[in-house]
Length: 474
Image 1 (spheres, rainbow, N blue to C red):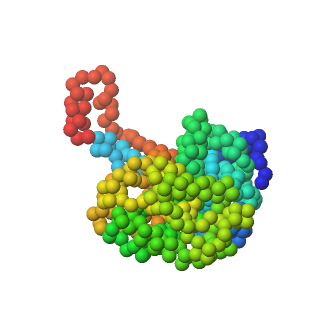
Image 2: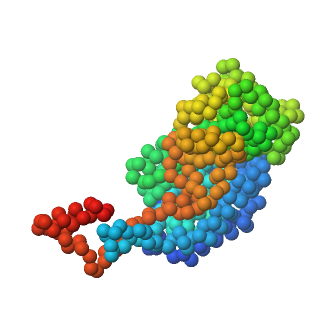
Image 3: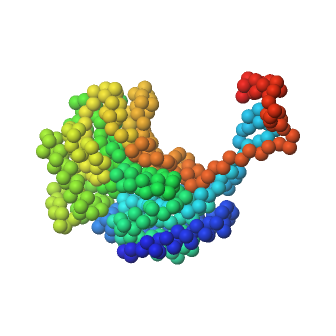
């Protein structure tokens, strides 16, 4: 993978800035043209994108790439195209009675040059979804993909280079040092998806330029089984949500809370559901590999530490296959029952096919467990008890929630997606993404005939009477 030099990074940034200054408010047709080219790029290169991501993972289910990446991006582009005219429109907003006959308007304007740092786990979706929002809002876009997906990064750089002028949208490839140079640029907005630890460094780099940031991070997202849930249906949905992309999903269930005395039953049903989806693992093209040997080794360390601390470990390996690290980067689905809270498994985001199962005694304890840690990016609740559901929703804070399933809130273009606290800041998708990359500029239009002359000095009785009136009506 080619490493972009700091000089080239700076030159491309300056070219985009100058292009934006010449076209500070792109017309609807210009923005639609950019979205059309992005959609055409997606449609024409599906096979190449799937192949590149498969190569980087050394085995990534093509169906997962097509569903979780290409489908999501297509839907996002089509949604933006359908609604862009309305989003761009300067809109009238209410005006207080005491300011009439003046009136207010809200004017969306693009910010300028947007930087996007995308991760390796969904390299196409998490690069292009924020990019399409930034383009729809009328910005120029610079994209830095992950160095852990070199085949995909080279491909997307080539495809973007063919479809866009460098001063419209450009891709800069390279390692962590390239990323540091990239995030040090004085962008008008910086969008980062990745770990909380790296997100802190990105926020610090952006702060030096007072660059506003959107941070899409992660954390330990709980799934809670209420006693009222349909257990058989729930475990199948949890298994899918956890094992999509082999658990390398920022909103994957990170740990499972089950009613007291039900851990063994739930573990058995989960194992059956997993075996039904993946009867074999090592050579099964439906089961995705871990992105790197380093990450695979980390997962093994997390499980071993929990085992040594007294947790019960259930490896779900239906065909009894051997997982030699020098032959495969796949990692068997693993259930860990009652791991101690002080283990790394319960302190770090897992990001792999390992699911801790813990018991809780009543909704109060479930809420307390969730609230004891950082606010998660996602929360999942399974059950039919409306009272318990509303308590979980109202007494916990998370980036988003899916009730009676996993993951699907991320696909809602009419809802914002984003974290809170340690799981991120800011949001995108649909109009929320357009607004993230826009300045919604308030404009007050003063009427030709108005009463503001009454507030000018010299002050006296008239001023006091008018101010007293306004205090009563405002």
